[in-house]
Image 1 (tube, rainbow, N blue to C red):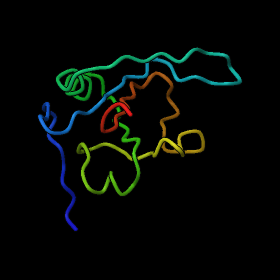
Image 2: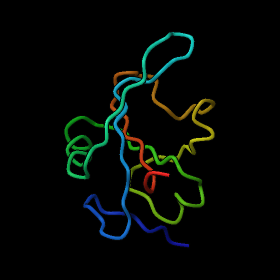
Image 3: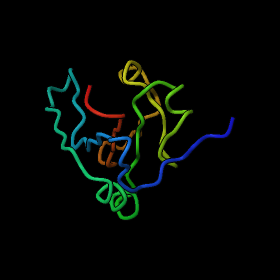
Image 4: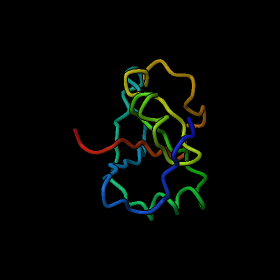
Length: 101
C-alpha cells in the first residue's frame, strides 16, 4: 500500500492541531512543560530554518494512512518509553495529531 503524504499547507478537510513543545517536562527534573499551537506556515518555516523534528502522535495505522513527509511516528501512549526522540533537548519538536480530542 502506497503511503499518502500531506503537503505543508492548510487542509480544508483535515484540521491538524500542531503544537511546538518549547520545553519537555521531566517529572524527576521538575521542569515545566510549555507549548503553543502553530500554523502550517510556521511549521514549514521551522522545518526549513530550524531543522525541527515533526512527531506524529497518533497510531501507526493512522501514520501509515497519511502523514507529513519526513515526520516520525511516536504514538502518544508510547511517548514516555520511546527512544526515538532526539537526545539534544534544544532541538525544536513539533507534535501533531488530527485535531483536538
